[in-house]
Image 1: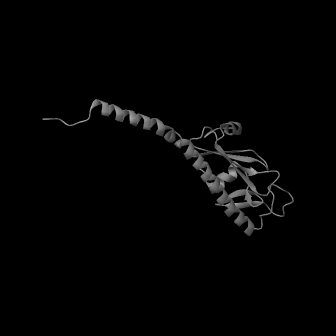
Image 2: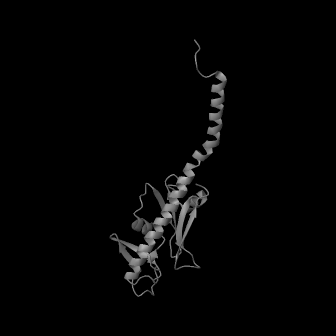
Image 3: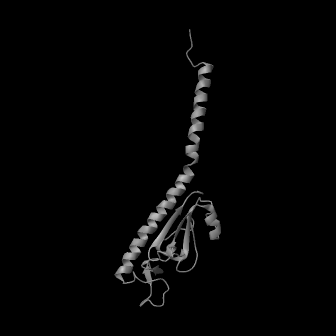
Length: 170
């Protein structure tokens, strides 16, 4: 009686083919973390833009859409109460501070690090969990990581917010 099965050569060839496929496919799977971080940052950018549009609409209803942040010439205070919390505005948009963004977006500290520089033209840096600078205590470390969302107002276009997604270091 003749037994049926695979020869040793056939098994070796299959193992070699599987090894080649693994070497070719591995870089694609290794890069998934980068893709996930990029998607997370881009998602937060979209959420922040949407929140800003809603805040601007509320500011327009209250007549605060043309008020500069912290300007003593404003006829009224450039702040809104959102979700029971006071939020500073700059031309009807969320003023770029960690406090304001946290209050409007209700960001969980376990998922995002939010740091900012002070002032009208301050910048807020948002870094997701899993990014190299997540949990950083200073903006220089976040900036070096090249994996963040930066939000603020440019001195040349100070009435509209600027969103910068940086993902080369993710």
